[in-house]
Length: 456
Image 1: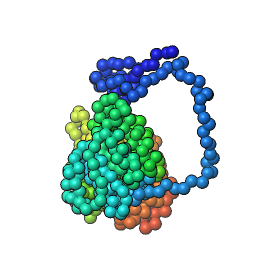
Image 2: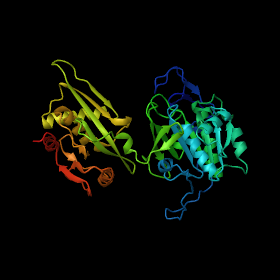
Image 3: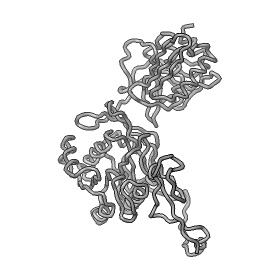
Image 4: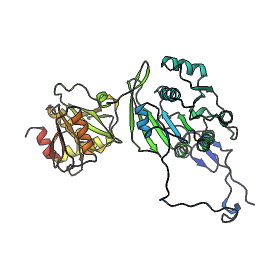
């Protein structure tokens, strides 16, 4: 019989190696490879015949009737929006974010609302004592909510407690990196422990119909710590984003097996906890009473929600021979370089001797290619010192040829702009959308748009 092979797992990036090494070949960190005691790889030649000893599986067609899953609506509209309507019974949800961003606060508020609505809710903390959670609940005005609290790190103890007839409707584990399974050797937080603990908790959710929420730590680059397979195991992954110095927080759905992705919920951190922001555009727009050079309003789209943000640009002329600087906050620096190149090559604007600074107001981050035309408008406005009309929004994608291309969901963007009092929109000429109360000005290519901006 062939000898089983051991495997070693990097505790930083989760990569697997067949032999130990001092340095991980993938992430480059030193002394992070640890033997995975929970998995021994048996060579294929030593396995049994895969066609014998099994049993037939039940097959069904795509047209089989199926009931929609029941949901636990938390009463927090922004959280329910990001989840697609609430927690699904028997699902596993992973929520990650920077320390102090408000993950525990948000989940405690949701747990209290569900408990007050008559649902069974349990909150298990592996980082804080039960009294610390009670003190936070009192600060939030939720001290009377009938939430079951516990401080534990043993997965076996947790499943023994809730595995009987008293299984809750919602179980919150804060956090998964502190959990420990005695089926696997290793300290809590290691790749093997996180994978094993998550697997047991997810299996409990599926068997008992309990919605399980796992709080996850994040690494310095913002990704959820632990093995990447953790995000594949759960049904929903939520990312809680924002700067601790800023008031607002964004809850973003990056994976959802029961709803749409890229939905966001917007919150503001206040002394009473996290409050919902029903109109997030108000967070990212400054006063529009007077025209200011270098500022343009862009209707970004997050899932099905349009959010109006302000694009700000500043250009500073340099003496000859100096190397100009390009600084970007909230947008892709590579895409800014492309827009500057198109403006110089197709429109004859000289940015080579000017420093360029671009910022998305409020710390918001834009990945929508429809922001190309808004960025170009802000750059031209800053360079020429001619303001964009304060009642105008701008959106469209720019090609390397200088063509201004239409973007998706133009009607949604225009509808949101009309609700907030904007009267006109500078868009691609082929944009298929009805403006309604918003007057549309279409442009076929970037040179014509620049001529309009410069009043030619």
